[in-house]
Image 1 (cartoon, rainbow, N blue to C red):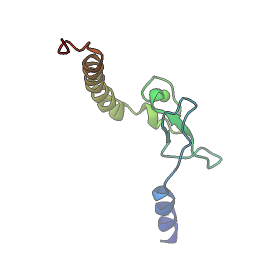
Image 2 (image 1 turned 180 degrees about the horizontal axis):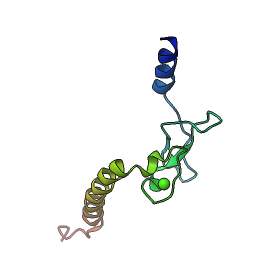
Image 3 (image 1 turned 90 degrees about the vertical axis):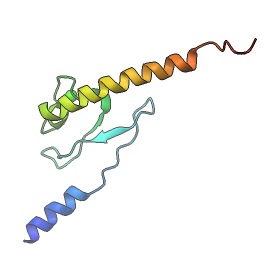
Amino acid sequence: MNQLALTESVTDQKLQCPPADDGMERFACPTPDRQGRYHCIDDHVLCDGFVDCPSAEDEDRHACMFYKTTKAHLDVLADALLRTSQKPSLNRE
Ligand SMILES: [Ca+2]
């Protein structure tokens, strides 16, 4: 019973990752490596075809299906926002 409680408290631990060099947020893999260390990864290594987390959670096929479809939508949105913000102001004359 105590074993279970210990496992849960470790899982609930908030893992803080220092930001990457370019200021982008980094994320901790959900499971530690064999030395008990949690790896921090950039979001751009998610679903990139290479295993970056010790238990390969970043390449989970089910999660990646949703990640990729959601990201595709976000990319379209980001493109639209960028175009809107870059459009020369035609209303000034
Ligand atoms: Ca990866």
